[in-house]
Image (cartoon, rainbow, N blue to C red; front, side):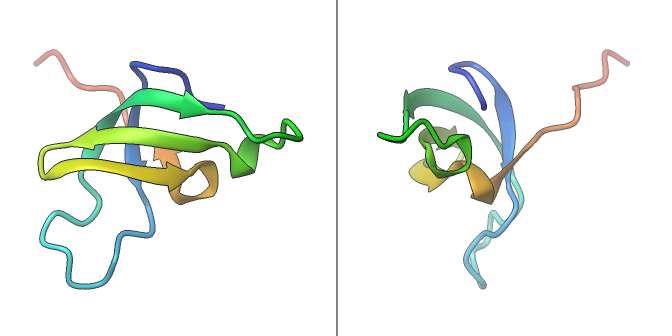
Length: 67
Protein backbone atom coordinates (compact mmCIF):
# COMPACT_ATOMS: atom_id res chain seq x y z
CA UNK A 1 0.00 0.00 0.00
CA UNK A 2 1.31 3.41 -0.94
CA UNK A 3 1.13 6.46 1.30
CA UNK A 4 0.68 10.16 0.67
CA UNK A 5 4.02 11.53 -0.55
CA UNK A 6 5.22 8.25 -2.11
CA UNK A 7 6.70 8.49 -5.63
CA UNK A 8 5.03 6.02 -8.01
CA UNK A 9 5.00 5.15 -11.71
CA UNK A 10 1.81 4.51 -13.70
CA UNK A 11 2.68 1.15 -15.20
CA UNK A 12 -0.37 0.74 -17.45
CA UNK A 13 -0.68 4.22 -18.88
CA UNK A 14 -3.20 4.66 -21.68
CA UNK A 15 -1.73 3.98 -25.10
CA UNK A 16 -0.76 7.15 -26.85
CA UNK A 17 -0.39 9.16 -23.67
CA UNK A 18 2.60 11.41 -24.22
CA UNK A 19 3.69 11.14 -20.59
CA UNK A 20 3.49 7.36 -20.31
CA UNK A 21 5.44 5.91 -17.35
CA UNK A 22 6.16 9.28 -15.77
CA UNK A 23 6.64 9.24 -12.03
CA UNK A 24 4.15 11.08 -9.87
CA UNK A 25 3.44 11.70 -6.20
CA UNK A 26 0.56 10.18 -4.24
CA UNK A 27 -1.56 13.05 -2.90
CA UNK A 28 -4.55 11.11 -1.53
CA UNK A 29 -5.39 7.51 -0.61
CA UNK A 30 -8.93 6.11 -0.77
CA UNK A 31 -8.90 2.70 0.98
CA UNK A 32 -10.98 -0.16 -0.39
CA UNK A 33 -14.08 -0.85 1.72
CA UNK A 34 -12.91 -4.45 2.35
CA UNK A 35 -9.30 -3.36 2.98
CA UNK A 36 -7.98 -4.95 -0.23
CA UNK A 37 -4.80 -2.97 -0.90
CA UNK A 38 -4.71 -3.77 -4.62
CA UNK A 39 -8.13 -2.13 -5.04
CA UNK A 40 -7.39 1.00 -3.04
CA UNK A 41 -7.58 4.16 -5.12
CA UNK A 42 -4.77 6.68 -5.26
CA UNK A 43 -4.87 10.27 -6.44
CA UNK A 44 -1.48 10.78 -8.09
CA UNK A 45 -0.11 14.17 -9.13
CA UNK A 46 1.81 13.84 -12.41
CA UNK A 47 3.42 16.65 -14.42
CA UNK A 48 0.47 16.38 -16.84
CA UNK A 49 -2.24 16.46 -14.14
CA UNK A 50 -3.76 14.45 -11.32
CA UNK A 51 -5.16 10.99 -12.03
CA UNK A 52 -7.06 8.55 -9.78
CA UNK A 53 -5.67 5.03 -10.19
CA UNK A 54 -5.96 1.61 -8.60
CA UNK A 55 -2.99 0.27 -6.66
CA UNK A 56 -2.60 -2.47 -9.29
CA UNK A 57 -1.82 0.24 -11.86
CA UNK A 58 1.10 1.64 -9.86
CA UNK A 59 4.60 0.58 -8.96
CA UNK A 60 7.04 2.30 -6.63
CA UNK A 61 9.31 4.72 -8.46
CA UNK A 62 13.05 4.11 -8.34
CA UNK A 63 14.75 6.28 -5.72
CA UNK A 64 16.06 9.53 -7.15
CA UNK A 65 19.80 9.77 -7.48
CA UNK A 66 21.65 12.59 -5.68
CA UNK A 67 24.39 12.83 -8.32
